[in-house]
Image (cartoon, each protein chain N blue to C red):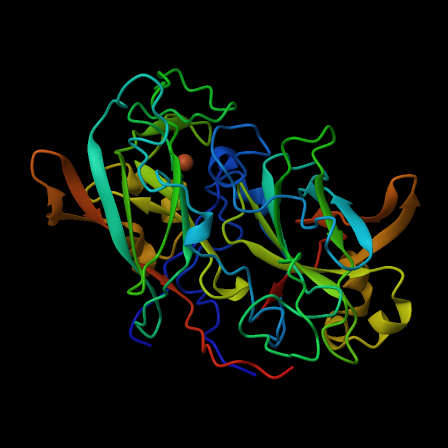
Amino acid sequence: MSKFTPRDWASHPSYLSPEYKSSRLRGVSRNLVEIDPELAELTGPAFGEEVLGPLDNDLTRNGRVNGEPLGERIIVTGRVLDENGDPVPNTLVEVWQANAAGRYVHIRDQHDAPLDPNFLGAGRCVTDENGEYRFMTIKPGAYPWGNHPNAWRPNHIHFSLFGPTIATRLVTQMYFPGDPLLDLDPIYQSVPAQSRERLVSQFSIDVTEENYALGYVFDIVLRGVNATPVEA
Amino acid sequence: MVMKQTPSQTVGPYFAYGLTAQQYHYPHSQYADGCLVTDQTQGERIRIVGRVLDGHGDVVDDAMIEIWQANAAGRFDHPNDAREARPLDPAFKGFGRFGTGTTPDNSFRFDTIKPGAIRDGVAPFISVIVFGRGIMNHAYTRLYFSDETTANAADPVLEKVPADRRNTLIATRNDTATGVEYRFDIRMQGDNETVFFDF
Ligand SMILES: [Fe+3]
């Protein structure tokens, strides 16, 4: 049976992070039962370019109705790697986010900030052979939420990734450098202190396109998987 | 190890238009939904229905469930499963995804087939991944079938689960007017908390 690295619990939040209210009744409270991974865990949905539409990686275009979305255009790019530093190619990256005013298209988002008729806020792409992905989007705004008095989520983009098998599945959030709300955000703070900065993207003048959009780099590291075929 | 894992974060309450857009009627496509079968798919048609319940027993209406399973022959559609003796089914990929915000009782629903056992000596099962607002790390569990009593009793993974918690992994079969339905509620906390796995 192939070996692969375990979920590194020193890198991930606890299921019960009481400062984040919703975790109190929803976080797993009993010990996880450890099992040896077998075929079911060492396989998973395999994605390819065929799932992509032409504008899926350009959130500044895929929601247009009658004009351009408002806000600061940004490029978000990075590599998906495993813990050995090897690229994770051909894997699906799905993203969703608020618009520049901090408002989600989601019907339950009742924040009193304007929707943008030309911005949906959802996109996806597949990593290339070097594990690279790239999105064009609008910098998301901060938004208030009901967790505690005067609670605001820092600017963030939600990411969902598969990697090679269901064991490497990851859902996370990308933040922006220098955001003063990070220190106050129970979701970001739920991550062990030594691991938090891995969620913060870096500004890059090299990725920045002159007269067009600022560039941010966000590398993502999944569990290391040995891709050797397994015997049943 | 030269790199450290990127920390997990909750999927949050607003994943619907990003991950399950068609199910929630947003103008964006989605890769997979609650229907894993076509007319061509081989195997016994089943429906899986369940709810996600929080520590108070209240239904979670903003969870997302993913399932991953073998085909009727017990083969996974993935390069790591190269066992030719178990044929692939071109009409079955084995992956589904469903949010709990669109059905009247906030249940998740999958139309799929009953998987074959993936090898001798194990019971058939479906891998289940739970995401939701307030769930910091997606939670892995497994769905086994109530009408597989003999196979379940000998299954090595079920054996690892404390005997008094095994029932949380068994979906209950109901023969309904619209086909075979298995009921599988997922309890995040409480007396009957579902068994979640780490591997
Ligand atoms: Fe958010």
